[in-house]
Figure 1 (tube, rainbow, N blue to C red):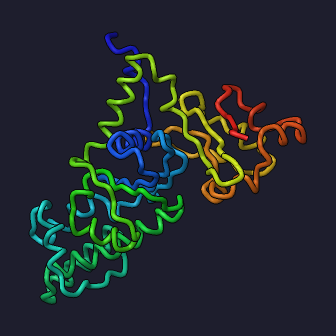
Figure 2: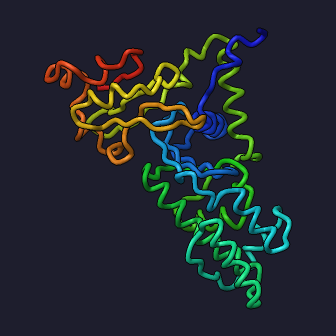
Figure 3: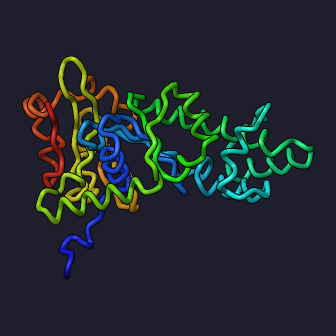
Amino acid sequence: MLVPFANENVSEISCHARGINYSFPSVRTILDMGGQDCKAISVDGEGRVTNFVMNDKCAGGTGRFLEMIADVLGLPLAEIGDTALQSRTAIPFNTICAVFARSEAVAYLRKGVSRADILAGLNEAISVRCLNLLKRVSIQSDFSISDGIAKNKGMVAKITEKVGLKPLLAEDPQLAGCLGAALFAKDRVEGKGKREEMKIAYGYSDGTGEYYITFDTGKCDGCGKCVEACPAGNIEVGRNDHGQPKAMVKDSVRKKIHLTCPGYKACSAANQVNCHSACPNDAISHSW
């Protein structure tokens, strides 16, 4: 095999984080707006993922969704961003569910509502949803949008308005994930990788210290033993980008992990069994 690591997987989330970090090292919050889903990602100064949330596999607000709306409106996909900016009155949408929003768009079109106002209304609804997604990981500057929807000027303008931060945009934002994957591969070839791209750290840092629980997704097989062992109930098993079961910190405690977890040393002293001792693959580590 010419590439010894060709069969290994690197998270799409990690790739977008690494790609954006290469272009904009100051970015700490990323909104990845792709063809099938949207993700809000927090990263550290080296482009490592510290937290992320996804839009629960709903197609609403994704590239595929906008492609469908463009087809309904009879517009080329490349023109919908500029068209939305021509709107005078954004039309409200009750939902951005792909099925129902399409029906609403058709109904508005039949009533004679302009394409610009329909698109502006959809951008408004999608941007509110994106803002709520970003709030779940905490919005920090600098901020960037990656993937294809970042080329949609109307959408970017509306998200900028809602977030209150002007995003740093790569020249080709749809290639951010590809760039990140290439950088990981380059590291491996040069012997610098050390599997760090397979680690995801959940938590935060503040004036009192750094509080991260890190999972090595390359080692974790999703057995769930850490879930049973955690006395605070902070861990769950979810699915990664490839549909594989992996352990992770529950979304509800990621921004307050120091309050619910005493840290490795304190937990080990108080409990015979904890997530570290229960993990058969040594895939978990704490920063405190």
